[in-house]
Amino acid sequence: MSAAPPPAPPRPHGHLPVSAGAGPAVRSVTLDADGIPLSGLLARPRQGPSRAVVVALHGSGMSAGYFDNRARPGLSLLALGAELGYTVLALDRPGYGASARPMPEGQSLAGQTAALHAALAGFAREHEPGAGFFLLAHSNGGRLALSTAAGEHPPPGLIGLDISGLGSAFAVGPDQLPGTGTRGAWRRHWGALRLYPPDAFRLGQRLVTPVPAREAHETVLWPRMYPGLAARVRVPVRYTFAEQEQWWRCDDEALRELVTPLAARRVRVDRQPDAGHNISLGWAARTYHLRALAFLEECLLARDAAAPRRI
Image (cartoon, rainbow, N blue to C red):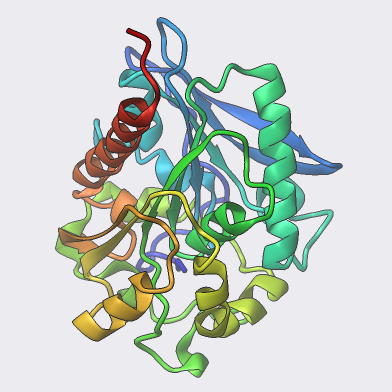
């Protein structure tokens, strides 16, 4: 769940400017998900084959540019991942970006899951995925990551999930959740202003977009949906809660209820100091992204260590 920054001069919605310069190039892409156009941003390593594909999924009311923070150098997940040898694909989920016009109501979680599966299958046919796909998701994008991993046929080579800003128990009442007619209190999305570079709020205006109605409806149902989905998730999962997370409960009892249903053998819950809900737009973005990619490294190491070796 994401909302508009503090008031600033109106700016067009969309992605942050496509990057240029000495770092890895970030370009706009559109994938075909069985007839649904999924727009997004793509960064690839400048040299050598890709080690794996990091698929970044934004939260409600945001867009793929959430993961390409250009408020200060070093804060973009796309640039960092490509520098470390990964392909990073940040997608506008169904109902956002290029798919907003053909499906203004958005899609149910099941529909989004099918669309993502189709898009990644097509991507793998055209791009070498390396070791496979790693889903890095924020807020309600984490619902899609979990649903994708819980599916009967998850994407081939699914490595693991790294999810920030999503729990299983709300810290607010249903009437306070952002929906089609309201974005919710901006302080809950952002936390203290000191946690963000000054340019974050000006640039963030270009990322904000309406929440599709179907998504808003299912958000309220998430605490009941979660246990059944989690019981079918077998790949490694890492959850991160910002120090100033205000949408989700993250006390000890809530965290036990979050991790207990998961079928995964490797589960971790971390706290991100000096961060609000929108971690990837703040000063803590690089720290969080490095920790997420370190978890990916751990998953790859565990996979390699478990593989049979020839002597």
